[in-house]
Length: 336
Image 1 (tube, helix red, strand yellow):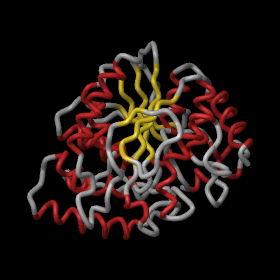
Image 2 (cartoon, helix red, strand yellow):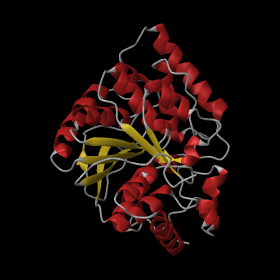
Image 3 (cartoon, helix red, strand yellow):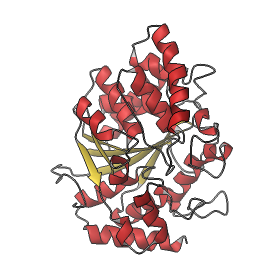
Image 4 (spheres, helix red, strand yellow):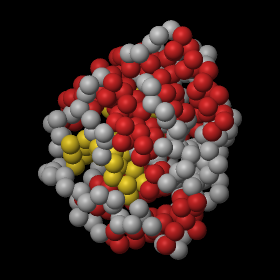
């Protein structure tokens, strides 16, 4: 297939690239998330990704940006595109356990809780309002916003939100073998409570079972005046589900073919149900001669930290697939 599944026709003068960072204690449940060497250390991943994308290296710890199997992290791909395009990254703190070491906008949230035990995002309504303020601010900064996310465990919270909204969702995973049964058990437990309490308001659903990123992204979508492209897979579909339930302006999505081709997720079906245009990036990682990147084609990692959207942005800015691939290869090779 071509580098982009749909030929882009998006007029713009000044692009902005942002990533919303957040934590949820769901990522610390053993077996749920592969976004870290241990469940507890998944809570550090957004911070380390922000360092890598901002400066080109992880500064807090002497770490290489690779998974334990040697697969380059999506943040390293995003960093490559930041270097190629020259578009500076902007980070938004939706709610993190650890303080950031890079400049950022603060949505004044807090780390998401385990929805099996208590409300997951008690300040969901406030985060939505703060997202609206950030959307107004970003409207003055540029006319094309590519908005990514980094929330380990976020596909599970996305599943809970989508199911609570009434969508027959199945979601992706950073693992090759998606822990479907475990996710389904968590989802069934928490969505059953929502149904019993007859909760239909989308912000109340997020409060009960979501994560901090979702209300911030939905708030931005409601007030941003330019073209909004959500950079991510099933987690951004949860954002779109919330926006649709609130009758907000529907954005586009850009993600990788590795998310689309995940047989355990129904990304295309959900996008069609919501009436969303999705751009799928095929970077051809299996043909670049890099063993770690080729693991994406086998279903490892797939997407994250706005990587698909960053490649999409580079493409619409006029960089060729060959330039994009060579820059990614050179960048990740330096981390080997």
